[in-house]
Amino acid sequence: MTETLRQVGDVQLIKGKLASEGLYNVFNVVTEELGFWFDEEIKDMFLNMSDNEFLDESRINFEIASFIGDTNT
Figure 1: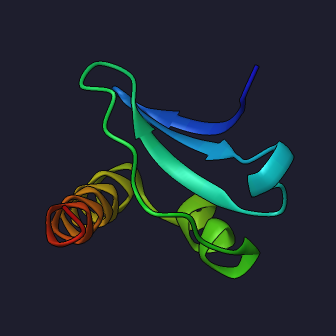
Figure 2: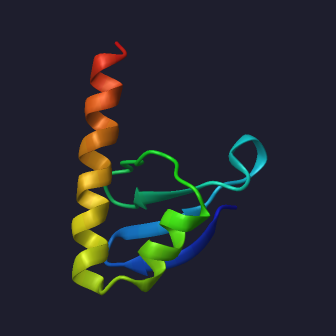
Figure 3: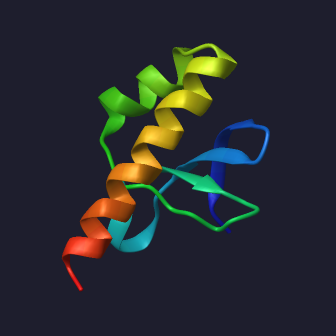
């Protein structure tokens, strides 16, 4: 089970495990979108944001991850 560090609406800040141990990510539980992995410094920024900032930054993270995924196909 993935550890959730914060949740705002449908978006979770999650802690990686196994190969992604020491990394963090945002995950939308409804759409199952997964952002790109980031380090503890960025995780701390996500933990200290307001709810609106958290959702805005998560949306940007999802868009970047989607763009990167599209260019790798």
